[in-house]
Image 1: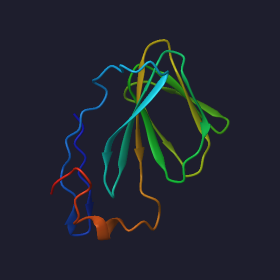
Image 2: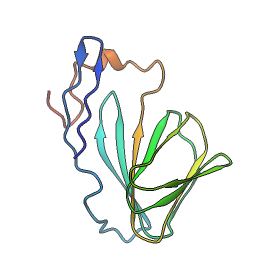
Image 3: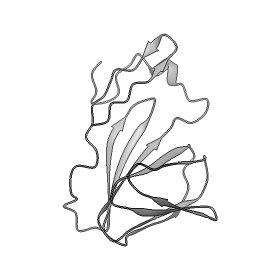
Image 4: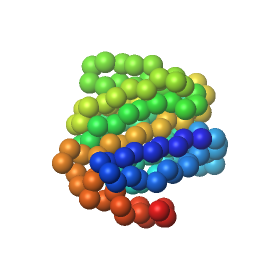
Length: 134
């Protein structure tokens, strides 16, 4: 159970309870993504990868954290390769190219996409995210 709570000044986002890493993918695709949470503060995306699946080299504009919640994978960031195992978290800087290769078993990777610098987070703190009541 993941319970993020983030405050911005005197404004606070309510606690959100979300389940991650518990379901097995029923998709035939080698990689399946599921948006778990989308708020002005953070976006969580769970990616389920079949054994040996490769999420090709790509970049996103914001900083992200990447962690395996089940199974293991290899994360390549630039020229550096890191092992992703449950409990390890890797911070990827904004705009850095990265790729993920699943290990020998089904792997679930959780991404935390952090707000872009200068994004109007505080102004949005008092508003409910779509699908989430305050």
